[in-house]
Image (cartoon, rainbow, N blue to C red; front, side, top):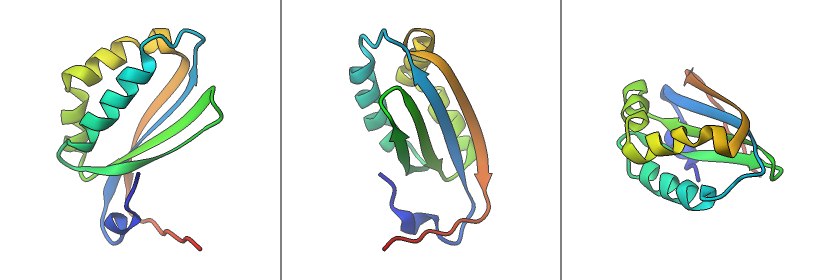
Length: 107
């Protein structure tokens, strides 16, 4: 998950990945778990947030720099996962955004 304290007072990047899952999810869970473990070890990784209704998901990962995102995009496991996108998703949108300001509140 995301430590909200690391985001206060500095610019960072968000990768927004929204998707609709297909009916063929063979191998997805294992690769998803592995990808999450590896991403968490990457330089510049700050955490993530996600919401899903089972079929549709919005996943946001946070990174210190765009260069950190570019390095992660070259990871061999990440490349393998992206190669299976046509199998696991009927639709997806990936966006990289610079966050210049954020506010967080929790009761």
